Figure 1 (cartoon, helix red, strand yellow):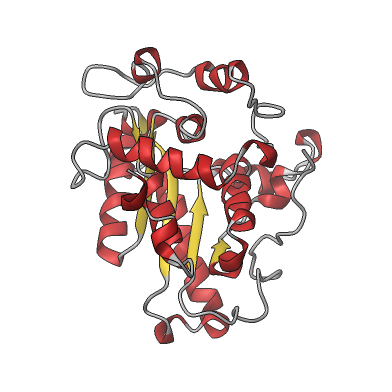
Figure 2 (tube, rainbow, N blue to C red):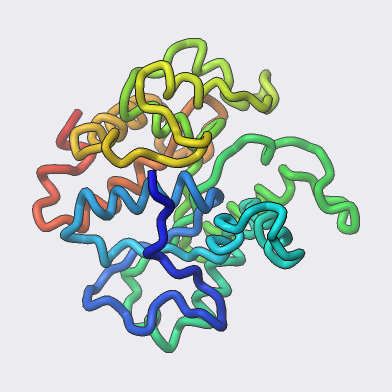
Length: 269
């Protein structure tokens, strides 16, 4: 798959857009993964091209991602390391502060801001900030609390975003569900879900790149349906079992379509 080159990363020196798209509501996405996740939502915006301008990325790391590792500057390496949930929230805050003159956020209260993140090690008690004696879990709780306070959405996959991709193509197995981070099962690094995608004929190229030909409207609708079934307690937006609340974000995107009845999550159950 060709590397995406159409998006320009947001930086103060290289603004993402010079004018606000001629649309009312925009959904802004701050993704943990600057490759797989952004490629996925880019293909969603292409599949539903009538609302393409309503889905925008807050991306600060794209140049670094597509620079060969041995050629990256210290600043690029530092940028790539900042993908924990708190950094995704900070990225939104930075974007809103610097780009308000372009997007005029106060005039568009219907705009939504979402972080897309995985559980993986973020619920562990391992100390990540020795100076302040904060663990991954402490930072996670603070990031989610900030999202709730500021009205930001959060789409969480337990354990990884790849399970959301899997739901487009197959029902999760009991073995799949066993990898979820829960009170009784800690995070474990695994290639299981990449292998699952390969086994069913929809592999990720170089372990992270999506092939757009593997996805379409019907598969997206099926993923929403499967994820909705797995999400038992709809009031719990960070489930401690195998699940992905990315479907809630997709439902929000579908609501912007001219004919929402054709695509929304409730219509396909």
